[in-house]
Length: 118
Image (cartoon, rainbow, N blue to C red):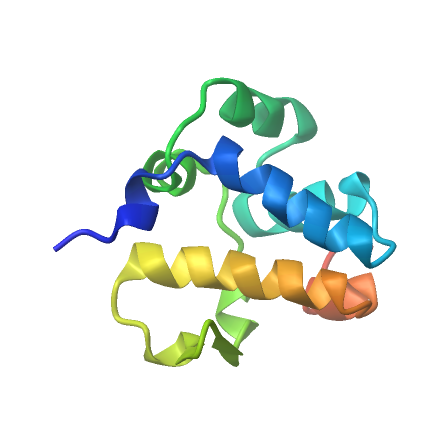
């Protein structure tokens, strides 16, 4: 059975991510950097994904370059341990949720990106 988040448009959730990080003093550029690190979307490609309102399934399926370092993202999000998730798409979504949480909690960008870019 498919989870309803899979068919939810990424564009409908992005403003919620943005509001969450901005409430904690982080910027849209930082959010976009985190999303780009995870998925490989450039600024223009991310904007295109938001404009065409693709769902989460398409957002991750069309991601230019999912970073191999995403396997370093571990822990609990929404009460579920990321490492225990067996559905690959749900795992990607929860990894994104975890990264957004870390950004909102004020973690340094180098730690959020697991030692990657900037």
